[in-house]
Image (cartoon, rainbow, N blue to C red; front, side, top):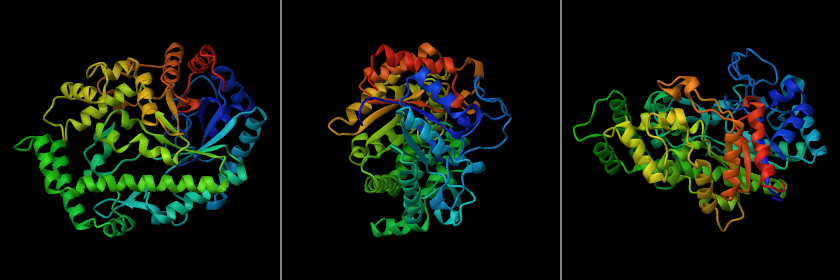
Length: 465
């Protein structure tokens, strides 16, 4: 890869609001950035939006009162027949300006597709009730072909230096159980995915009985619905859950089957990138849920991902991680671990995941502070040891904390980024062996003073970028 990666995630809004040269001056001077990680293909909320109703104004750019998502493709998605937004090919202009400065340009491709895409319905997942979801099926060959076209656009038309695929998703078992932050808000258990015809056909070819899968998930739906209503099973939640698994082992089988589909997709994307241009780097984003759920961590084996990744960006978000951890605990304490009070359940998770953090509910105010970034970075670096895959630590700089994560706490009580806090997190990541960092989530969300903490650490460490 050549030198340390000091990357920052950006969407088109910042460049449009402030001007390309001004944004590039800012991120280079304040954060010593040498790589732009652009949200190129993105059709959902998260990093690809201006602040809504002024909530995310950070003292730079325009104070807007945006009412809807302003995401989409940075440039023209020729393979999809989509024009550049507002007729402006921002990606081409940003890439040209970045190259003149010696900056690398990486593109993030998220797993969402635009509502206006012809034939979109044929790409989407189905829940086990047969209803159409809003998410794409990772096994669908048409979706594979669509992404191949997007990658071809980026490599041949825009000469990007790297591509990162992002899919913050999980299988139907863990999703139904609410093994994720904000899991209580995820809606009806029966809305979990994927059970489409592509998945069914593929599963049956592998000897998986689809009728048994559906039967298991119907029982699981009833179990979770009862837990959310606080109707305790006669033998308790944990015993009842294991009884479900013994009677329906297909539940675990289907979870693993889903992850294998995601891994199959990223393997094909890696091959596509390398066939188009071997010099272009391919990586994936590993979402923060792996820092909360030991079950998700078991499926996201870093060593299994290294053969088809040049890099992995692992989110080690410490400030927002505390409130998110609390919301995760509240979710799972109503399902498989419903017998255990939230304060005890959080301590159990700390023990099995090797954490030493604040108790429940204080953690939603303090964040994950005690050497969390360094410890988690060290763990994933060790997981990739012996491979050529480089590990990039995703650093939390002003990531918004949502009301759903705060519970009874007030927004003013939540742990916030400071320049010193950011500096410490970056130092921890590199001292733990990270090959680079990704300043996250998005430039327009960041206070510029806090962004300067990245540059402080990089220069103090004397890193060659």
